[in-house]
Image (cartoon, rainbow over all chains, first blue to last red; front, side, top):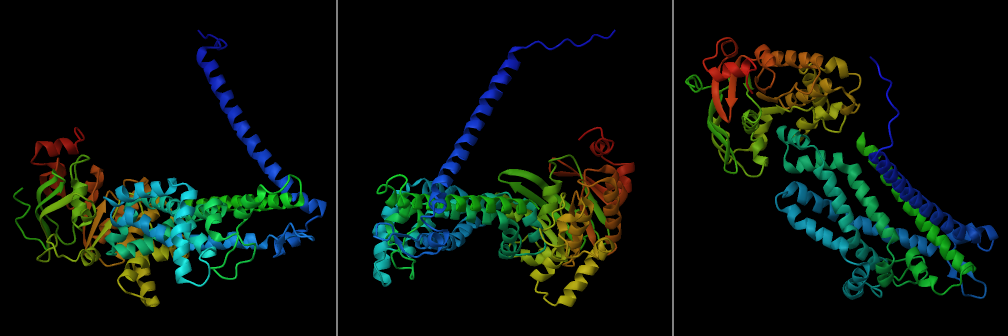
Length: 300
Length: 257
């Protein structure tokens, strides 16, 4: 005897399911709308100068003279773009070896207490507000640099040093996670061949986790690139392409935060700052893209 | 257990106990491993057979909280004594794990890796070691045209034979196998078993397995472990046809464990 299945009645759990699903869809939709409109807003403002022809692309990206208030204003952003890249790269160069060693120390060398000791320290480091970093940099690093090297102490070197401490936790924790995720018996099979710990670390562990560690480095660079306050406090904010590490310079972020309050919406100066914001945003996208590519390579 | 320490083999354990903290995972086991034989270690999960196997090339050193008492004799030297050069020792005793674990490198580099550690830089010599190791692991014909490909592109069975080839590359006298075929399909399992039989002509093999038929097929001696103790050790035919111990019989018949 076959009974045709009755059309299922709308029951309580169906309604719950529907409500939950709608709520979540709404949230996701809102998120997408916010992101898209932000990108649109920044892009429309940032590109306004180029469309109206008040600033040419070559002047913005190639010009070294930033004088928005002069009688014949010029809007060369090269000093800030180069400053941003310089401090970011330097910070990554300083922080990466330190972070990778710290990660190796806590996962490979002394896994028993290394993690217990370093994990809280790293979490603490990442929780310190950037103004505190800047302040410490201004009162410790800048005087040190001033006494040791020629110049005022403020400049690219000071900015990179402060940033390197700030991105240390990012790189360390990503690298430590990658190292911890390595299959245990991969290490063991290296040991079983009679390899020393150093040989195992340098020839098996590091090459295998390299893409994941690079992900950490790129994430750290993204943070360094976008950091404003701490850098602004120690870099000096002179609108010139840095010729020395110990000379005052500027970054995109510092010039935006310093200039934003002094301009009127819609003015050429204001729009030029938006162009820089757009450059920052695109660079961040690029960093995310690189991370994605590294992750894909990591899977093999 | 009278048979165990009767003849002093050039490779044997004597009263070997392994502790994790205060827990005694392996309780005073004496086992001989004769040249050109395969010894199978069987027993239910958690009986200490893998721990025992790992201790034979001091792999347990790297696990914090584990201590090993007793002796492991190789050619009259107790390698469990402090002061043993563990790095040197592990060249003598190769090991292969349950899951194939090739390095994230090319097939060639996987094999050349161990010899390079030990200072062989000559390209010709390395080429030769790679070829002979792969031949001994019966993998050469399948991979000789793509030695530069990633080892991860091989099938599971091929990867496992690659791992065996890698272990052979440093010319060990003893090969420890920890359930080497349990993650493989029947065809690959057959190949690995065939390989084990061939390899025993050159060295001695200790294998942990959960597969009774496999133990019966490939081993010459079988040791049955239960709760960290050695219950019975004898020739494989004897263990599988007429074991002395009731527990061994029940385990082999699949009534328990």
